[in-house]
Length: 143
Image 1 (cartoon, helix red, strand yellow):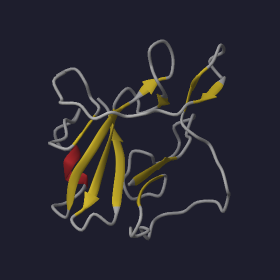
Image 2 (cartoon, helix red, strand yellow; image 1 turned 180 degrees about the vertical axis):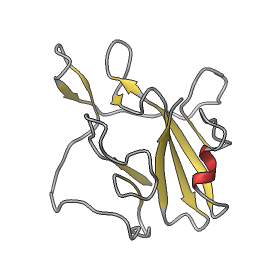
Image 3 (cartoon, helix red, strand yellow; image 1 turned 90 degrees about the vertical axis):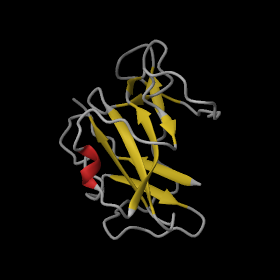
Image 4 (cartoon, one colour; image 1 turned 90 degrees about the horizontal axis):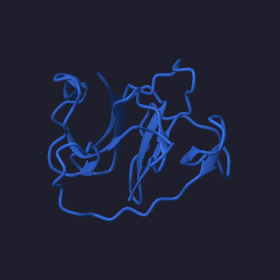
């Protein structure tokens, strides 16, 4: 099981694009390692995945059930396993051969048919696991 934590950065001043700057954390449990760059607040609960409500600034919490199916949609930018498909050809160079692709998830505005809101600048988020599957990295990329 992997838990993904992404900093809420509505002003775009954070380092959520970087896999080891501490604004994102892909935490593997049970038995995972906490990366040295991780930081957080000692809170029992915190923000959750959300989508927009009636007003653009409304945040309505959501929970999603994910079902694995065969990947057939070439326009889809969310899937697990296989090979990542990036917006820029050099994005995978952010991590070396010790890391293997885990999943990618498309960004969304959280309106209309969007199930959630994740601001990746119109791009996609990428998750990787260490070769021993005890540590994760997450970053995003856009055009």
